[in-house]
Image (cartoon, rainbow, N blue to C red; front, side, top):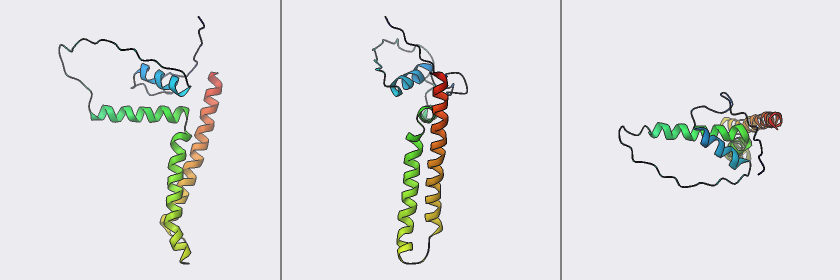
Length: 136
C-alpha cells in the first residue's frame, strides 16, 4: 500500500476554522484531481433537541467554499468578475464614444474596476503559488 503525504496548510488562519475539516479536505482533494468516493452511512434519528442549521449557516458555508476557492485558485473568482466589469464598462461607454461625447464616468468606473480586479487576481494567484510551493 502506497501512502502519500498531503502537505496542505490547514492550520487556523489558512482555512476558516468554522467549516468542518472533512468538507475542507474533500474540497482540497477534488481541487487536486483526486477521486473522492462517498460511502453511505446510517445515522440514528435525533432523540432530543433541534437542528441548528439555518439560512445563516448555509450562507456561511457558501462563503467558506468561496474562501477555499480563492485560497487555492484565485483566478477562478477574480477573472470572471474582472471580465464582466471591464466588458460592462466598454459596452456602457461605446455608444457615448461613438457619438463623440467623450467617455462617461460609469464606463470608466467599470473599466477601472475590471482592471483592478484582474491585477488583484494576479497578485492572489502569485501568493497562492508561493504558498503551494512551500508545502510541496
